[in-house]
Image (cartoon, rainbow, N blue to C red; front, side):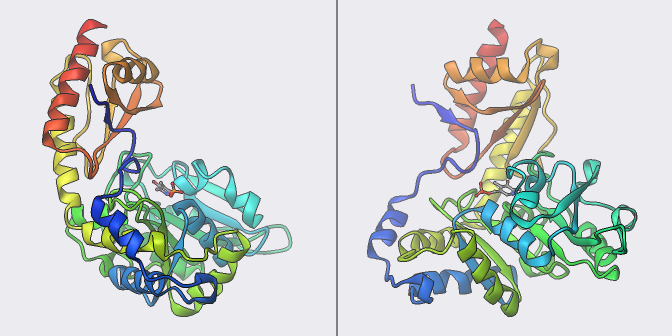
Length: 343
Ligand SMILES: *Cc1c(COP(=O)(O)O)cnc(C)c1O
């Protein structure tokens, strides 16, 4: 029995085409900006998100942390949702790497702050207060269940920040999922943010890498911070080549979303489980009524050949991706149903 791995959309294996592309990639030393494949990827990524320039970074975490460092001064504050990845899942990188203090907001189902929350959370620099240096938004919102946040909500929050002279970074690890789910042009989604990070290594299926995009001057300076953080790479064309192929996987994210919708429907049919209809490829399932904690459910399902993660006391997170199809979803549902049935 092969395990169906729904832990994350990061578990995909590179396709044969990606492996061939890695082997055959034209390379140079990217620290000298000499790697033609990386340069092509950076141009393609900038183009995709409708920004002037982009920088290839090893991970989404590094992309976000470079953005934080770029936009802020040491000692300032950063505004974000209390469930934001940049705050919750990046080892306290905001204070550790930039000397910045997060001020967290409960953004609830909206996932991004209202203009009022931005204004309330803002602190003006004076003799006693450090000033707010950055607003971070997230789309899709990972911890809140892969929620695709409509562009106008991003725009309203960004406008409130800009009115206060505060720049805006978008953590778009799954930015393309949001655009596909909302049928929104990427350039429209980024129109009012100052920088955006998106991952090639998640739904898009690349083995490695993320992109940080912004205006040309921002990216020129961000290159220095990438070096500082240890992310400047040499013949990176070897990993950028599969990244270029990943850019072609945007439209097919709709299949992952359809599989996630089917998965949630099936979970709801299992007595004791409930899962809200997902916006994108992340399904959150509640197992309280089945009398199982998230840890218990995920452990039992793992033994039965379906892997996913506990995400809260009675919550688990399941992700669809390039390496699972409709049959895998049906099989996963059968296996989960037997586990809950026997519990
Ligand atoms: C995965 C993720 C990141 C970090 O990306 P890594 O490549 O795992 O470092 C950042 N933000 C969000 C919302 C994510 O889901």
